[in-house]
Length: 307
Image (tube, rainbow, N blue to C red; front, side, top):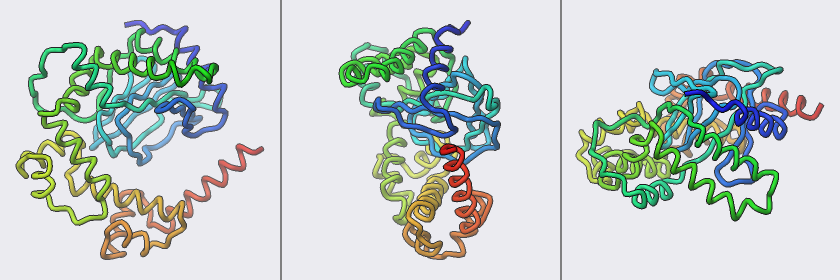
């Protein structure tokens, strides 16, 4: 399928004119964000919420469980639940930066559209991964271009943005990633139950995790729960909880200036030494060194944006 390059050029101009320095930026439209990268990068640890991510210029790749998902101007990235991952920029330069947008999915809107569209019941297939790559259609690209255009008409955002957002969700349900979305929205399906378990873990990451209790909470056997959780997230429930704990501790040390021991205890670790070992394994450096490097990067970015 050929891509409408006129629509892509419009997105590039709209995004590039609003963000002139590398980073991720929330827009005044709920759920919409822009990003800019000016150099290829090694994979960086991140959490991707249920969302669709488009590249208007350049190329990116998401790594989940050791598997790469490359996407560019012809392919979009879709995640149907919160996925711990590593994000990598493959093609970007200062002259031609990697530009794109993120759009958070509303599972309630998807569920409503599935019911209204009278789609045939979804036969429960083997549970799919919570991340996939889809082919961009002109209809999808046009709806995103209309959403972005509302930034030039801020008074229309409260009225028109929900309508265009609904169209985007509909376009996704007509895309080659529809089954991935529908398995999360099917209330009697395994994917929906795993998504509920993920929600519980995000709220209770500091609690002791008992697999049998969490499986019972979402009405699954422990063995079935463990299997489908790993299938969707590429992690075991315990690994997922550890990922949440370590990232929250990183935020506490970076943004709230808590020391290593206090951050470790606050997220549920009983041993600071175990915390430091697992932190180093995930982020590639001990906590103090990692936080110092992050603060150094933020200072450099602040200086470059003010100069």
